Image (cartoon, rainbow, N blue to C red):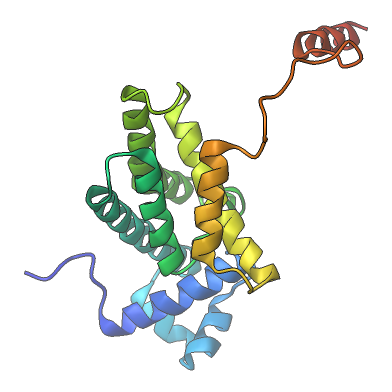
Length: 221
């Protein structure tokens, strides 16, 4: 029985081109005419595969991206060691070896341009596909006492932001590979960059409590 999620060869070609163009330029910057020109086909042919137009095309493209990354991430996590570092390195390697995904750009720039229903559906799909596998490994590491307590979802979002940052950095330089940058980012995330513990604030430096008090005083004026 054929996989209902597996597109035809022609539709696959459209989705491949759409992924490359949307991920590089964003939803608002790409028109169906741009995509048709890129594929050297008539714009009407795109409507054969995506009757609802650009928004349907983007949604199906994004769902495919999330689905592929969810399966890939879970697979490499299952094969990695049980410690958090090994699992994060495995996920970073997966991201480095596949097409870049601008997750934050999609969430904060592309989705608001979609209809409310499709935006909500895509946001939920992204959360389940990308955040769930990562938050699970952070939660497991906390249960083992490997890392301090924290919100696993926030940690998952922070890690995804690191992967996005690496993708952007690659547009500015080519001397360091995506994989090497990802490995270094993981080391900094787990170990920090300070050479010694941070000291307590000096008398000249207001504490966070003092700062909050000052803000409250300002708001009261």
